[in-house]
Length: 573
Image (cartoon, rainbow, N blue to C red):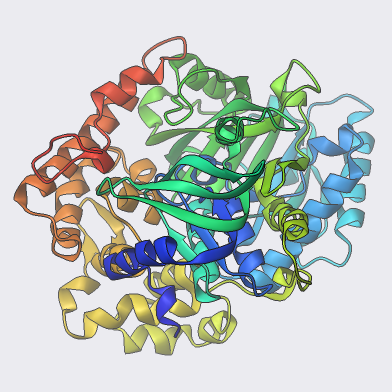
């Protein structure tokens, strides 16, 4: 295995030196899925590439999506056939070649309400959806009677439908997928670093030639030189463009999407649901032992780093889904809530639900490329187009993109290991269901995760307070996946923060004890991390009691960012 795959504290120290000393072809700003995709695309073309993220990988939009790889049925109604076809092609690539360990099919039921034209209308749309997908690994849609639909989803009220159609899309853990794309970029030679903030862009003769960086953990500063800088910062796109004293060729508008997480037994169904609402659609998505229910689609003009759900958001989602359920969901059923911001291209419409989900690539200045808009599903296409634009600033021929045939880490060998599940489970002394879950999170990297359990069998034990996860996974989050803080582990390397009723507070001390020796935390730092996490959970819960959006300054004040704490708990940098 390439040692660069292992993003650990030692890797972090070495990459700071590489950023200071090296001259790069491409510097990517932003560690979401688009930035990770750009870094992978550039690195696999043979370009000297660096990726910097001011917080944690996928800490923005890319950990707070609906967690779907889908074409987007509603875009057919907007006659955006190109976007749907492109997204469905990417869905198939992920399912069959690039990330079969992370992306898998998921069924959805579309209830029909009784209008005479609805079945032929929706049926024609789904037939077109299947046709645009071409030869696909997922089943085609099918028509169901009311009896057949309720056999799959007994939770549906009899009067909520006269029949239904079932179709398939795909889903993935977005944060884990993004992180794995970033690790794959590192595997192919990219310098990949989180907690590294761009403080300014360096210009020479009207051209962008690099960036001024600050290590958020230590306060150290450095200048990195690059032939071209690619701005992949999503809802922060305009902020980065302003660092170059340019307005840019497009503006980005933030739309807030909120999702609820509820226990699987609260909705009796073997399939997901898609419900039409007045403004958009609502998904009920299978998620392990839970359901994800969402989303909203509203303007957000407050702090982009801390989008928060309001009571109105939660009430809206509950009212929409309860309109079809025999047993309504209540606030007491909610395990978790998360809010994310979609970076939509501004200008097409006043309603965020009508803004285009296509992406745009611009070169506002020589040496600076910005990419924004788009859907999570089409991140690879966005990355390819951004690097194609960046190549104009290089003085040599560059190979075309190869990411359409470059599997991400863990994909190679995944199917073979899946076929040997029972023997693999016996080798590691774990139940087969546990090994299945690990394979679907780490793919063929699963041996890396479990190797330390040969010397320390306690790492094979479930985590107190979140027993779906093994203690070994917590350790791996630091030793190989670049987690620097408690929030990184509980919110993105795992999804404990949304999957257990206390949002991970009960598990936080145990997790901190596991990672403290690996990260060099002293007792004061460990205590500060646990307290900061508890304060963040409390602040987010508080925001969910307010009818209107709560300015996230209040959330930020209530929960100190652990990236700005010394071991003594004092602010720094």
